[in-house]
Length: 357
Image (cartoon, rainbow, N blue to C red):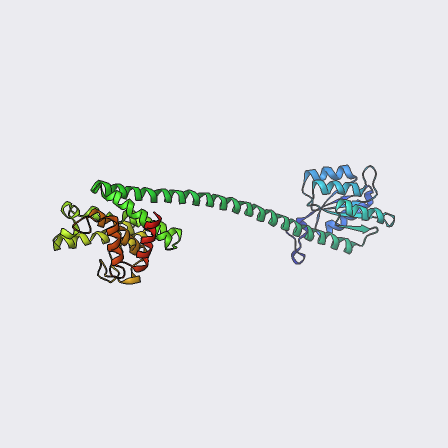
């Protein structure tokens, strides 16, 4: 129950009066009943404890001087067993010191001197009920807040656990996708996978020398590994013929492998950056590359890196020219084309990466 002074309904509250003098109990019962309270009585401490055990009591009014168990002792027991019951002590003028001690020991709300004033006693009972309701509401809300906090903490812990599980699942799926695409490359043409691994490794070294963050380095490594994924859509004739030996019609088809690679990967979560690098890894610094004729820094830095790493590998395999080049010759071709085919800054990093290899 919640009490408010402006809407106080005495009939909602039960008051226990305790005194070993029947006339005192009679007076208290009459006054409180006329006010609308439900009243129960007890002639001593033992009876009072029995009444409290049987039913909810909002207020107990006890005399101080009683045989066997005085009011202070009774109200101390009430505090321990029924702390929500508000406690008032009736005391004679000679018991004031004892009443003050009882207030401290039994957490008594107030003591009232005999003979009491009816209006003062009724006002004290009502204020005790209001105070008790406020304390009860506060404790209930605090308990609710603590329960909600605990529930929230449990929910956060559960959410964090699920996020970790979900992150691991996504990571596993991401790695599985990369492995699957790598296997497709190898099935389509066995030499594509070792070639792609070398491109990925060199691209990663260059990305780190460029000071790129971990996520960017990872994207560049994966783009290097999958840069030829679009070639799985090429015919055997186009796929197995050197680019420099392809007729014009087949060369146009060959050039589509960059956009096909992008299309394969762009629908996958976390592959947008990788897909963009794959699309642009055949762009030339002077704007003569494909598919978008991008120029200079308009080419993604990852694509500028992968372009050099791939050219280095294809020069040595002979795919980039009619004859195979030595590593030294391949380096000279790349450095001599700085600012033309290849990004000058990335070409410098390419040389440093080889020296550190």
